[in-house]
Length: 92
Image 1 (cartoon, rainbow, N blue to C red):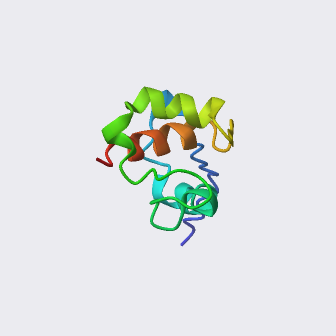
Image 2 (image 1 turned 45 degrees about the vertical axis):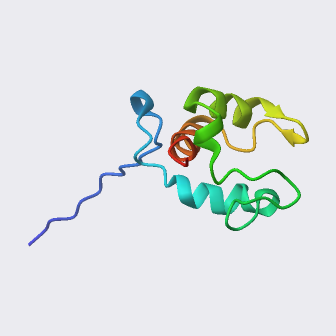
């Protein structure tokens, strides 16, 4: 009997820069496609489907955090921003 596990494990995704806990694609679907388009080829904002061909992961993170052009900064923050930057950097 017994076996009641009462531990409340919460993964905030902020431990030591680990971004694996964040589903970057889900964040993109939630926060980016309304301007960048469902397939990221552009809408009211430029195409980002090949962002990694033009920007490094660090540059993409800077754009996410600080904005660029008509895009405001801080749409994604912390581990979410890092995960999205890494994901977009692979798009070439």
